Length: 283
Image 1 (tube, rainbow, N blue to C red):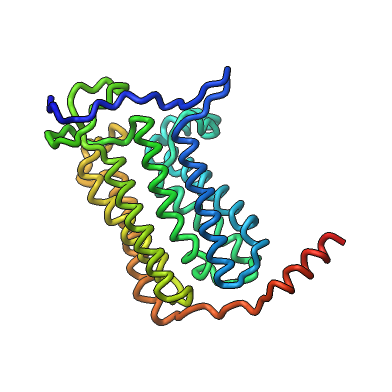
Image 2: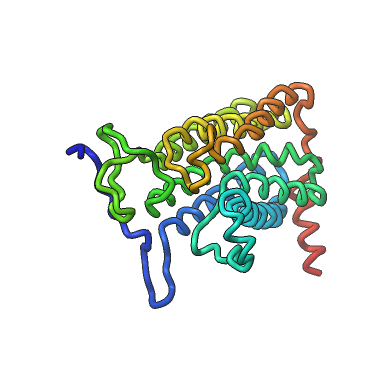
């Protein structure tokens, strides 16, 4: 055992009030979406887009991401368990969310929203959502750290973590921290990219960079992780890596096509019109 390793024995429950438990994971998950909400609001104000659209859009995205993440885990990682007892799919508090499924669910939610939005370009909206998505992913991985889950193989590196609650006596790669830091850097890069072009950016460029960078790093970090389910032990690439490949390809395609697509026309919308619309709804 390395004397420089980190002994990690943090209770995943932050506050317990009778039957009510507030977990670090749930708090960080919610914080990621909340901060993302205000980042997107900043973009809407900057581009003079209708602010009343944010709440509607957020609902589609959150519901889509959560349902997709849950179904992704159930169908790709433990299908035999949930097909045998489908009601367990609803037991989200027991754990089991897959980021690949969450990404698909988010895209479906955003597609449904964009059909009725003020701006019919799904890619235009997706580019704005992509930036805080990277930050939310960073928060979620920190939540995994507090849960002592999704960690890596044993290591002699001085920053290895001994996950006491998992019965470990040797340090392991803290892959949650590797991913959280990577996602944070991706968020900073995408935010700078948006500001560099002052919001007038080719459709699909930011979303393409997000998909490419997120899932390329995910592909390589998976080599350090323990298998999440038993059947992965006999696979050349694990399920996380296999599911990452289509997203990497899609991201590269978006980056290439973005130059041809160009930026979406800015919606002709004024704040005075928004106020009139709000008054009309109230009446």
